[in-house]
Image 1 (spheres, helix red, strand yellow):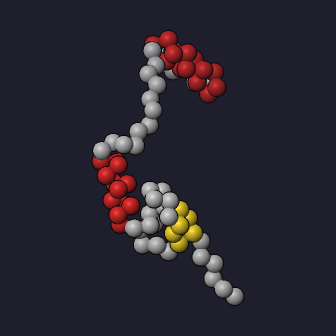
Image 2: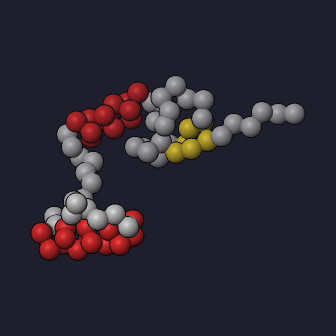
Image 3: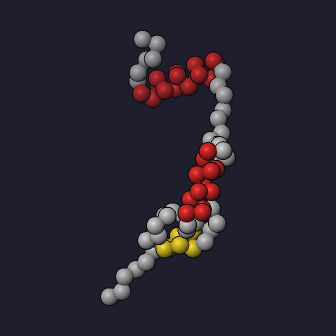
Length: 73
């Protein structure tokens, strides 16, 4: 019976890598360092939607309806 080796793609360079790689999920220290640099330079961002008071009130009311909890108390 042979052992199955899983493979995946490096998220930086897309090179095919085996799952027993030391730098998983990256293929090398270089790609791991590039990813770390992206975090430090804030290249990865999560989009944010600003809410006004009316939106907040509406969402609070909807949460109250769903949970049965009144947040005004």
